[in-house]
Length: 181
Image (cartoon, rainbow, N blue to C red; front, side, top):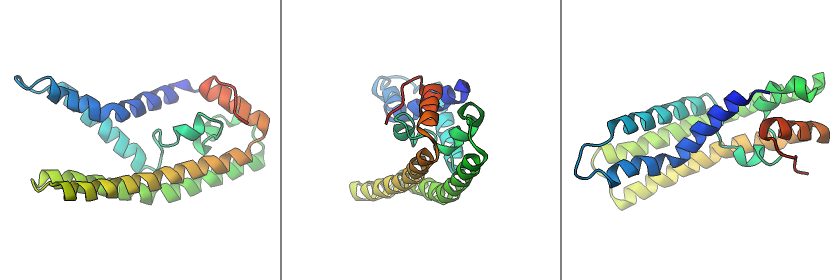
């Protein structure tokens, strides 16, 4: 079982969910002293890792809702192909789904990166106001949603390639949980 990539991915994904609160906490409790620069560096490093992984077309937790609930992702199915006893036809189909997902996800990831850069630029230029921030956030979140849909769609299609027994095995190997119908 390959749990190390899962643990690392899950840890970083959970850290990224907490980034806003973590980053803000340094400001909330340090008004009279220097900012916690080490914490800021760690947050920055996590953000850079997230940006790189997403730019590569990988999901970095964008499809956990599917994966945890019986809708396996193509990359992880390929990683577990021997334990799942994929047939050659299944393996070829999952490879094709993975390639299609990457082809779909990479341009969406580029749009998300560009939208995030525009959001940062609004603040960096010193011209942030409620309307500019609202527009930049809407653009960013629309790009994130489009990217997430590319990953979730691949999970939907991958599930249909596997047998019920393979889905149960996958669920047990990835999450240690019984599968969902």
